[in-house]
Picture 1 (cartoon, rainbow, N blue to C red):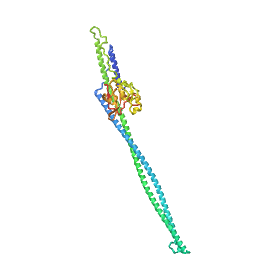
Picture 2: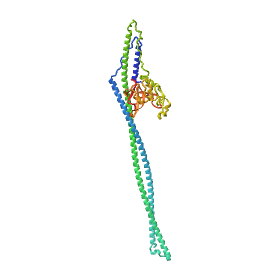
Picture 3: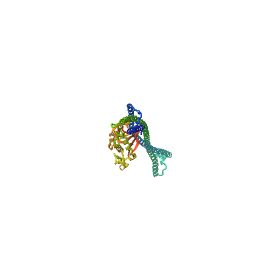
Picture 4: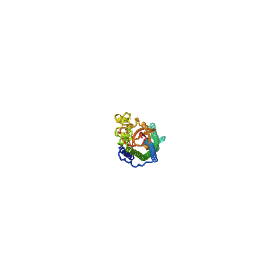
Length: 447
């Protein structure tokens, strides 16, 4: 209970005692204390406007924070996408590096083979040159007359000619074969080097792609971090404004409490004056010469139907603290068995429990005031709308989402506290008022 409400309750108690003592016919009237401060209508209106402005600012920041959270989620998804792009670029680069290394090995091998073939050709060419030189010096050169001198017979002469021709032909054929091999290996070497150039180009492209992907990933991470920091600043600003809203609402409640205490004082003052007039009338002699005995004409204390006061409603709700939550549970008589919802409530076994849901608890609390429907959206429309800055003990608070769809209701206790049946798996309990998603108006059924 807030200080203002405690003082108000204290004044109400003092007033009640005064009235009881006065109505009890005590010979000495109890004087009403001096009047308490009475804030002006301008002070009350200004404090309410300030609280309304703070509530509007909280709502604006709540919307901004929701948008920021949505943007942060999008940026997180973008970071994950860029990370996968970077992974792909890394794999492509490693593959290109492997291909370039393999192409380098092939080019090195082909070059070595081409060099070896060239060496063999030069060696064969030198052997052929030596053969030709020796044949010339020994007179065995093909076509030379001296190559045939010394033959024993025409047959021997023919054989020598064939031998020399064969030897010379084989040397020439070997040289030509080696030259062909050298050409093939040189072609292979050129092809391998061309593949190496292509592989190196792919490697360079893959490295550039990886650099681009890494840069994009870093940029996405920075954007996400900047947004997270912005979210933190928004949350801090929202918490500060909520604190100032609570202070503004406390000021409103304090001024309203002063006004209420002044009105209570006025009522007590009127009661005192009425009692003094009654006692004066009783002191006059009756027509029969006797005084009034002090009991005739004594007014009885008025009493309203049970459960129709704010405190009766709150007491009724508070009597159910600790009762389990059961979706669909609760009526004017008390907790009832929950019903199936095909989802969360079923998972918690609410259909097997005896308890309240949020709107069921309100039905029970206000049973002596009004028959409420078992749906928080209709309960929101069941009474007079009051700006949050003017909410007071006994009002119903509501929470909704886009389009004004109501999904929760609680009973305000004052001092930033409320009693509620929050959700499946929980119990009826007292909680601090949550301003995130709260509807801009409270619903008042009493007063």
